[in-house]
Amino acid sequence: MTVLLASVIATLFGAGAFLVLKPDLFRVVVGMVLISNAANLALMASGLTRGRAPIHPLPDEPVADPLVQAMTLTAIVIGFGVTALLLGLSYRVYTSHATVDLDDLSLREARREQQLERERVEA
Amino acid sequence: MLSLALAAPWFVAVALVFLDGRRRSVGALAVAGVAVNVGALVAVAASVASDGPYEVVTGDWPAGVGITLRADALGTLFATLSSAVVLAALAYEVLSGVRARLFPALALFLTTGLTGIFLTGDVFNFFVFFELSMISAYVLSVYGGERRQIGGAFIFAVVNLLGSFLFLIAVGAIYHVTGSLDMAAIARRFGEVEPASAILIAVTFFVAFGVKLGLFPFHFWLPPLYTGARPAVAAMLAGALANIGSYGLIRFGAGLLPNELGFGAPVLLALGAASVLYGSIQALSRRAVAEVLAYSSIGQAGYILIALAVGGPAGYTAAVVYAVVNSVNKALLFLTIGVRGWLVGAAFVVGAFSVTGIPPSAGFFGKVALFQAAVAEQSVALGVLVFVGGALSFVYMFQIYQQDYWSGRDRAGVPRPAPRAVALAVAAVVLGLGVWPEPLLALTAAAAEVLAPGAAP
Image (tube, rainbow over all chains, first blue to last red):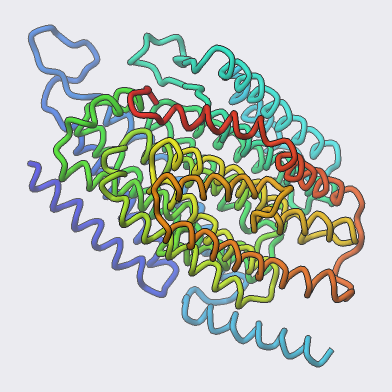
């Protein structure tokens, strides 16, 4: 179980890291989602125990650790909010620069800076 | 008092979400909210100073089940400092006219998050407050709505989210190896953890906080962000948010994982030295004030890391003093960007003296603490590095002064007396701490004592 989880987490994190390094903003956002899920799984895996749900634990039976699940739930909610924020930011980039390609974006910004510099020199 | 410090900004923030922050009265309400928070934190700090650290378990749960809030000298010092910086920046922006509806609410969420981070005794709770303040910061970083800000803000958000997720993974790992999320319990049990996993966990924490602080290899998000942000937001980011990084390194490094910190000291020294030199040299080559200050932040963060790597009482005290002084300096310098006049020039000079470490300014005592750490370590190279870094910062700070204030060239913007008063008040604080440093030194010594081996964090 540990090996399986570890390889799933590693694959998710690796795929996420690969996507984050892409120049396309939406791929970056999807990459962040994958990485956040890798972190959530790692959190789950850190306290994985077999047993009954700890709603009404009986003295002679093992109980599953509820803490990691509570933590993961919190982390999922936070990840959700953060994803929404990142999508919002990408949309802002798209509306103001008309592109979601990071290379394109930096090129445009460099051009704009140059133009501003030229205007300053002329003034 | 502890609960008041957390609850006051939170409730005001939630109320402000529904109000238009551009109105003067709403801005005043926000300032009042942060002021209550600062007042409560000062009261907490006073009681910690006289009666020692204390804990509150939320929701009346028995200790060990509920989430603990713990106030000790280190946490309250950082919490009070960060909230005071946010207060100054918020007052500055409210006085010069808020431009976005949600700005005051976000500043209050940031205050809540920062207060929670520094006063929590639970590692996962640390993550939750950490995200609360980071998300407010992501939104704040686009405040002002200029086009070039958005690219920088996106990179800031992505890089810092990566840091947050690494932190989350490290929290999971630390729970796995120690079976607890309580900082005190972790510090007690961490000595028995298998060295290989202990080092891995320590490195993950280091990377997570290094990203927040903008240390040398993790700093690439920092200059575009600070250059694009409005002065008040830049002051909040550099003066309050960066404290998360320095506090995290101090608390998790020196407080929870001291053995691993000692083990990694040579690497930390090298990275710190690289940060100092890289930041200073980059700052020298820049002309825009915000850019110079951004690179200067990277350099100054290096000193904190060096002090931590030296370790021991002298090193920890130096790290705390330097983190505090640096945060006030950066808040002051970023606030002076947006205003002008000869008084602002004087305030800038105070900040520049403080960054360089010339008396009578607070920065002098930061540099003194660093030299003391170098002497305690008996390292000539360290002393030389601190001196060279100081000399470089003298050059880049006065380059800006010469270019912006001495040349007599009129700077953009209209003279606004009200926000100028805020910048001058911060300058007076920097100067006051330099003239009468005893309270600062006593507080930081008490904070460093928390980290002394054997003491519960």
